[in-house]
Length: 227
Image 1 (spheres, rainbow, N blue to C red):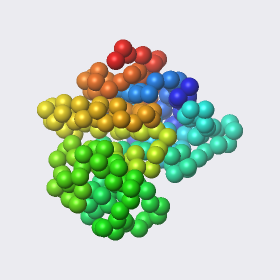
Image 2: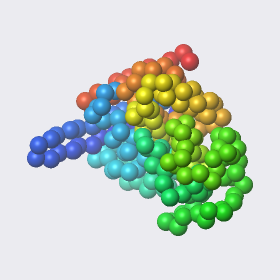
Image 3: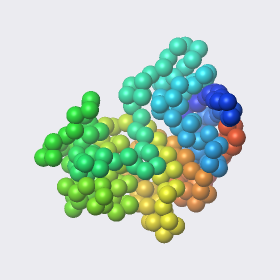
Image 4: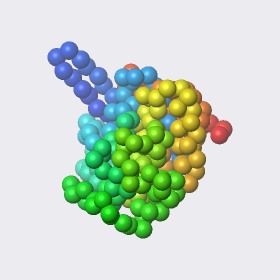
């Protein structure tokens, strides 16, 4: 089993109450969590990544416990070894493409030098066809180049799985179509599990091996697709 997930988390303020209760098991490589904004998709992803702590439940990836409340297992985000790509890609604006990718290899807060070289970084730059922009900064890149840089930074450390948070939500339709195709091609090159969250049915059709609907903090059953 690739993913075995059961997560419960309660949020309560003076004006708002929300309870997340999400469960799924899946053996596919590309899994999409689908639902409207505010359904609990991003919180589910953050709980899986270890950026938030569940009140109860468990997260298991390929037979390894990342979190298990009953067994008192709670690996840190670093120990989980998951690559999390945020909706806006979260590239460092003061670092070049090479430096951004190299940052994924380094521990601590020290930025890689501008002339930093590493064979693994070079391999990912070549794999994602970023040679021509390797010394440019994020503001100089196209949307596709920014996405490829963010994915290369996520993958350079050889993560156990890739988590993508609404990667196309802020883009216009034409650019979404282009980047969806690029992402599909990139994912075919890496053999690691993916969880992608979206509210767009076109993302599901283009990228999912299986889909789970999430609404009002509750998950539906896993639907396997014939991609």
